[in-house]
Amino acid sequence: MNIFSDIRASVLETLDALVAEGLFPADISWGNVTVEPPRDAAHGDMATNAAMVLAKLAGMPPRNLAEVLAERLMNDPNIVRAEVAGPGFINLRLARVIWHDVLAEAIDAGPQFGHSGMGAGVKINVEFVSANPTGPLHVGNLRGAVFGDALASLLEFTGYDVTREYYVNDGGTQVDTLARSVYLRYLEAHGQDVEFDEDAYPGDYLVPVAEALKESVGDAYVGKGEEAWLSKVREFATQEMMKLIREDLSAIGVTMDVFFSERSLFGTGRIEAAVEELGRRDLIYQGTLEPPKGRQPEDWEPREQTLFRSTAHGDDVDRPIMKSDGSWTYFAPDIAYHWDKILRDYDELIDVFGADHGGYVKRMSAAVSALSDGRVPLDIKLTQLVRLWESGKPLRMSKRAGAFVSLQDLVERVGADVTRMVMLTRRNDAPLDFDLAKVTEQSKDNPVFYVQYAHARVRSVMRKAEEMHLDWSDDARLEDEAEFALARKIAEWPRLVEIAARNHEPHRIAFYLYDLASEFHALWNLGNSKPALRFLHEGDPKATAGKIALPRAVGIVISNGLGILGVTPVEEMR
Image 1 (tube, rainbow, N blue to C red):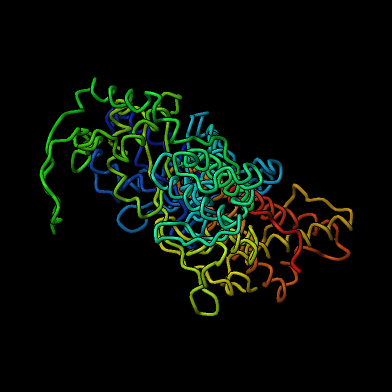
Image 2: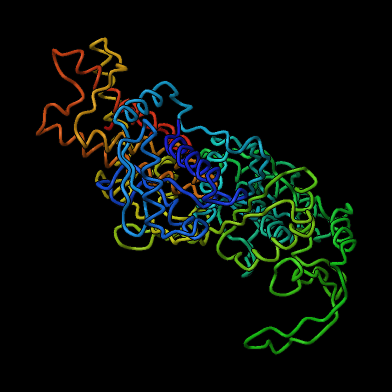
């Protein structure tokens, strides 16, 4: 039940009647007409902007049109008051039985409450994490992992067919550096003294990889040149690193459907095929780029290159896809990879990148637009930096991981649920401060605790009701404005889910859960001074049965919301 959709349908039905009367043209669209919660709950239960956005087409002042609409809307039995406000907004007050129906719907639907068919089975590929397989995941990767996984769950919750995909960057020079670093640890395992240069990966996490290599090949590579071991060690090390990365992802509850190897694009004709496809669209040419804007590098010189005409699809400049020595640029395999996704018949693509990949947004969007003839939209979501703090100081780096704080370090300190929830308490494109002390404190300022505490309180009520052999009653007793306010908040859930999914913004779920928990705690505390507002009434089973519908519905919404975020709701607080 999405009461906002129901009331909007009533508004549109009224507008359709006005079309029949000749007030609006027959081909008018109602796309800009909204029905949403008012900014001030005292003004009503809902508000519509219909008169504001349609007044010009009707040839009437907005307020005059609003008065016409308000009068007609009163014919809907669910609307008990329609008032014109300001320049032409219409505030609506609904029949109170609506809120009882919302609770009944939430309880009957249970885990399905808020589910939507909005996605209609549309196939979406969500690529996220995609970290270089050169070490364990760190906190920067963690934010993208949690965001991408929560977004995928949100889309699934609203009816999309979602694939979670990891692009393994095993085709660049970084995996050769990994192989050389593992080889040094391998020599070390054979008792040799080694020295790491500044390009090597010195983290202790490579020690067990080298030990495993030693166990596998013995001393076969000791004293041998790179031609004897580089490719084999590279493959071995990459596989071991991906095992480690899978363990890291598992630690925060992320399971990928597909791991796609960048290396599989090289030497197989797949890059060439993607470039040929662009060529058939007259988007590949030989040309010379303008010099970089701003300070020009001393070694810059104009040279003819193979270019992708990305400006034809919204980019700022055309992009080189082949270097002057005939080798591919970093962009070329990325084009081929996205061409592969298009060939796999995805209807939409989502890439989750770190903020340092902001320069890739326009060029990648141009490539997908070109290869799909604009049919497949690509949404690139950037995740900003995470700053870790402890006792007001930056968190020290991990010795095991090297020059960063590893995902495992953080999860071991605060747990997967806390980690995931905190990562979603800010927009993905806003920096996030993660204070280890604050995220574990029990206070209203800690959204993780505050939401979980609300769920634990709900469960305590339901356990006591079960001990009294009571179940909720269809005759829900909502009497106080605080109770109706909480019911209205519950009614927002289906609408909020669809908005979050449509905009690819899972943080909206976390924000909503915090607001819902706040309303619930406020009502709970009112029960201390107003016994009639308590959920449990000793000696009055009928009153209790009427009251527990509200907390039960709250618990269902919190459980469903935390499920989208990948967080386990707690049964009780210790």
